[in-house]
Length: 606
Image (cartoon, rainbow, N blue to C red; front, side, top):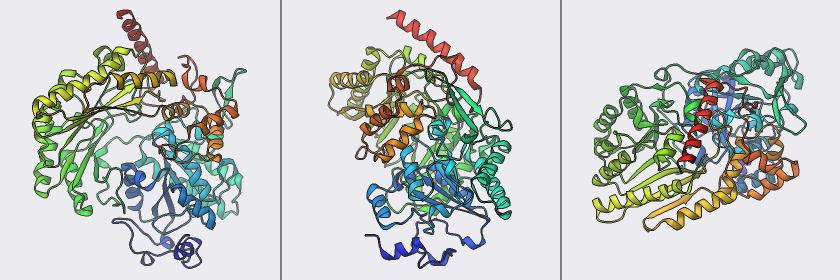
């Protein structure tokens, strides 16, 4: 049973509609509470996963800080409740509400979702339904909040197109304020004229779609299919909306303030530490990686900007660990000066420095030495594959010898375990590539034994390859369920050193990710049907029931084999082609062509 005070607060039987900061005490450190009476706009960032996951997302903290720095807007937070809380809310007839002021989500002007992974899609529907907002965008009026979505999965927005009003592509810092202001201005103008119906809402959305180059409004684009059901492209329902959508891009990361007073969670979160983004983008062009394409160009922050932001964040939070974020932190051009400066400032304070994304290169050999801290214990690296010819195929140019030398130096400096990230099921994968994963993990264990006099813990975390939109591999299909199960057994059976663990991502989850990442707008029916049949928090193993999805797919009549495993012809239109990325489709086609030639050469060599 929900606490009566909470019930009264949310239903506004005790607290007035307009809430003041004085009415709230006991919120998280650095949470922002504003008086709604003195604001022009209200935004709620609704992260489509639990509090512990959402509060670990750096982007949420960035946008929360950005919008709350404005005197005319407030940004509050909401998260997907666990099933027992969802059940309690429904039983008591209460809407999902924001954490800061208990405001029902349906009363905000804008409701924003960050789509970080495909298995969060049903969570978005849960949030909308608990908020009392119609699931389908076509059923909303101007009285309802704008439903806005961005993030990596917005790079293929079509599976969620019926549920979202606007998708935004590119950097959130310039795009979120622009869309919020434009929506509010259009909404206020029509509401003043007495227009609040669905037609008024569509008129405002059309204006945004025409004027804002990075805003994609799916309702103005209708998918076309041939007689066999093959996707042919999108047809515009209005001549004034653009054919293609451009990403929002900030040219200078240095000019974007870091969140130096992030909200400190009530409970332990997945990444319970300060996060400082030092660089956006990646200098490399791995063919499997979506982020390296969609986050171009490469932009960096200055060393002293990073250090001072980290110091201010430490003073405002009390965390004793700082994580330096980027796609490839050791590729930051001033990496060693930055680490030495961070150590100079934070070592006396007992604060450790974490580097979660190290590249295997010459710098790796010095990392263990310059990261002199008593709290170090593990090294995390992502070789992805273990053989040179496959590494050439995926365009990840690293050296096994650099990897082994770096691990040896780490063991000499007190590191006691190594975690390695690999991919399984890449185009052209052979048994020798799986052998290489096990051999690499065991070689590192043996190096550790030479330095430590015992076998250190080595974990090879193996993810199943899922082709992503806007990558050179976007035309490739996925490997089959049978192949992944065989490959996982093969690697585990081949492993002989007890301190080495081969940890494989669940096959069914990967196949569902492939289904959603490659899907067109017809996939929305599958998502909604799976959700209505109880699909919740699908990325959590204790809540995942993949069979609900396969049943929903069968009922909608979509072919799982074609949706997941068949390759797209390179000349075909793809469901996400209307979203532009830097370098564009021509570059991706060229890289796919090169990959095909390299695969043929690999096959001939064996």
